[in-house]
Image (cartoon, rainbow, N blue to C red; front, top):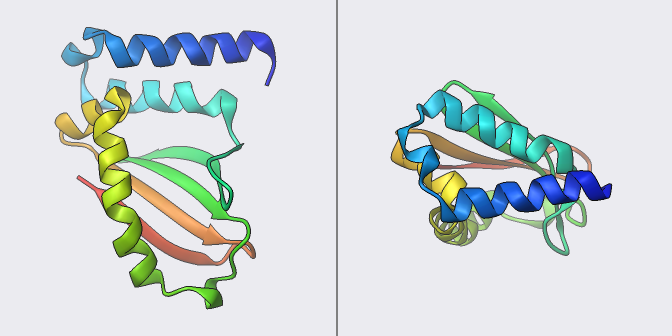
Length: 127
């Protein structure tokens, strides 16, 4: 990531986290702005096993497409994976103003996971 993109990403994050200017915006505006925020910095490694590849808007959903790049679908139980991960994702969504404002306006966050071979693992939706 070049310096200008990083600075824009960092300042956008600070603005979103600590100001209330987004409160009057429509759900559609918040979704578009969230996509514009993430697009320039993706793909990026989220943790030791996960890469956030892309984001998209589908109706009232903000969809985050991720790859579990060290995991084959056959190695895990998708239902157990979702049940363990969902509370963590809910807490993270409420901690991040950009995402919590989407939820507050009636939007949904969908975390879509595929395995290292591109095979669908699970979708986790928070509303």
